[in-house]
Length: 139
Ligand SMILES: Nc1ncnc2c1ncn2[C@@H]1O[C@H](COP(=O)(O)OP(=O)(O)O)[C@@H](O)[C@H]1O
Ligand SMILES: [Mg+2]
Image (tube, rainbow, N blue to C red):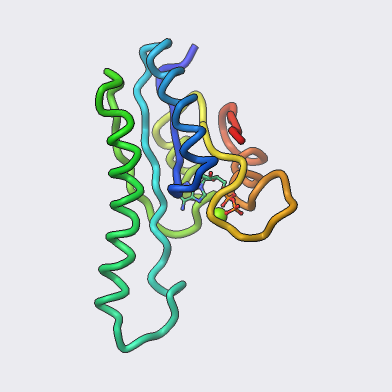
């Protein structure tokens, strides 16, 4: 059923919950896992004389998220392909799913955003609406 599963993470708890599902499905179906983390644009951090420090902090934050996910996949026997992206998370996730022909996207229902009260975050909502394949949204 599934040959290539895209798992997207921002390091949040819902995304980490989603990883268990992505990993288990990949194991059961012998699917490859495409691990997507979308780095924020440097402009989002605002103009600052500390540009290079911010740039490093941004990279380090993203690499920590990827490293965390990789640590949980290490002994799973699943083949993982890391796909670092930049820009708008939803667009990047949808684009990778299309270009890499993924047959399932697994994401968290919410992320690091602080706006409470909604079932879905902006990214999971957009991905669920516009993805080229089925989407599993994990709480
Ligand atoms: N920068 C990102 N890179 C990869 N995946 C992301 C990113 N941001 C969000 N996601 C995915 O989308 C899910 C929902 O996050 P989001 O819609 O941003 O909720 P919130 O509005 O609470 O931040 C996350 O659990 C994660 O799976
Ligand atoms: Mg978010």
